[in-house]
Length: 146
Image 1 (tube, rainbow, N blue to C red):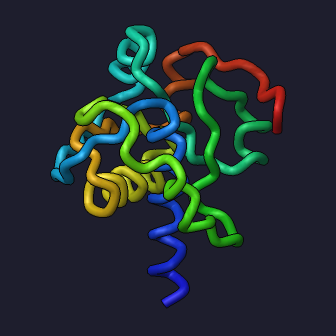
Image 2: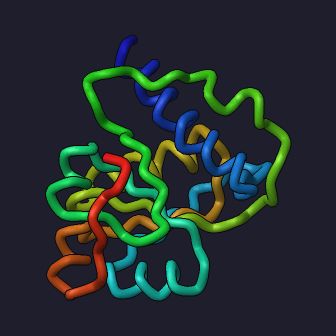
């Protein structure tokens, strides 16, 4: 039961941010695309939002992608499942988003939660995570708010 609450909370937290940012679609759909870090870099450079779901200690250790939105998805604390409620009904349907974590495991789970529980239709999962991003020599910056 706690796992189900926690999963709903993760979806709500990420969905809450996306709703505030104007990216909440109205219809649920399985629409997850696994991409590599190079493709993610191109999407982010074109203005697509990137959500980094790692923990603060991971952000501090490696740095973060510029302008990424930092939302810890997997932690020992449950996420407030009601976070998105005040913002429901705002945003454009079908707006894409990129999700990244350390290696692609947590981000794939968040992507699945967003499509299955929060109605997202265009979710890109960075399958190699920040590890691949860094190996490619793509830019990272220190996390100022960690």
